[in-house]
Image 1 (cartoon, rainbow, N blue to C red):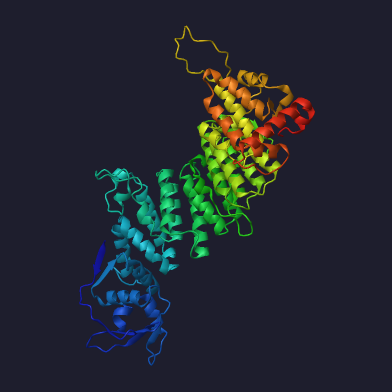
Image 2: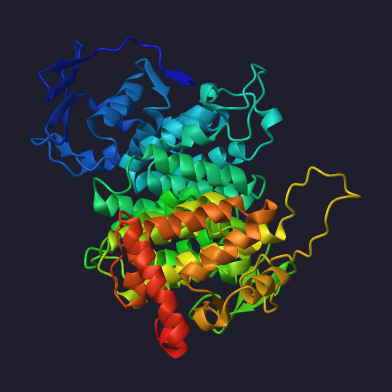
Length: 613
């Protein structure tokens, strides 16, 4: 820390209690200066020789009344004492902590060069220009001290000069930094013991500034345009975290903090991480910030949504809502992501992707896949809320296009969680939510779980078995014979997208092998129809298909379905919304299947009425 000594005489100021200050001298004092509750007993001559203001005040008093009051002097008694000691020629030391108060008090007392050469104002200005403003840490310290000296420090341009000094140093090339600074290298993952100056070396020191000064410093740094937006973004994040929890404490203070940080964010995408933006958005909702600010944060989050995690999106709903989390806010964020890059290269158009817009631009590629996985993970979390409406679940799930989900395992998990937490759904509602899922995009593990899931409608389970059979039929069976002797099989292939309009060979083979009299219609989300056999027919046809060695997994799934869900099948076909018990006896299941086949042979039209729809 820089310092400057003034005067050469010994300090002879003495005190009596907390409110009496006097100079130890053989000469009797002839003036009393009152500053609040403190009284200074001093001599006129040394004071009046250097202060124009004191000359004016003394000239207006009478001989009987030698007291003057200057309670409005900036810096108070301590600052006046420094000025008084300078007038007496006593030794006084100025540093970053007291120099600004002394400078403002000297200005108040009008201690200019016009009254005496080398007066206090001149000496302090030289000290500021040659030492304080050239020091990084001293500039920050005096900026702290100016807050209690407003408006004097502002009028004297001291605040502006401090900010310019700090901003210019923060904008310098790191290799040219030669002054000391605070930087915790233990937190730096790139620290390897080499004494290099990091790009964000100044971030930690500025975290000590009050929000109004901090805002002005960051604005000055941005105006100099020599610091990367990434470093500025990291500075804003570090400052916000240093202030503690944004959702607790003084609401007005925290709201001002959030509004200031959002205002200071660089406009460039990626200047801060998406998780930090969501932290600000969560705080803005809790602190009831302006709607314009919330929209700005929603837009920014949508621009880099692929970086977020499901837990980041769990923003509490407003107090007046019944739901736990603000799903509408996430809907807006995902919509912003979908609208991102409209008309740019690498983007495609897909109709009715947003659910609320007939045509909306959708980003293709890995980013959309990441967001689809994020949305499915978020749906699994919010599904635990018993008050979450089915319509909001479906709206959010449909915000993601089908092409962006290579697998529907995460979506299936979210649907299953919703069905579990909302047991009161009607049959039509369960079918509606399950229609979001493409059974052809489920993994083997998900299929195995789904065929035993009592919460799924039977038509969904049969769909899963149908597509799994088609998949295994399309896969070549292992053959121990040489290629030249191996029998040739005419197996088809199954498309990977639910929106495919052509029927694959595997599906055709599956359809042709089923008895027409016992067929059931399966209608997909987009109106496509599939015809498969009744329960008994499916089992027999599947057994026939797997004699050549293929389809072992599907055969196992059929066995689980018909051995564990016989009573459920009957319940679904009789338009019951309750699932059958997996513990139904084998005799009852055989009797039911035999009865069902008899009905199929005698009254085909009646069997159609019992189809799963």
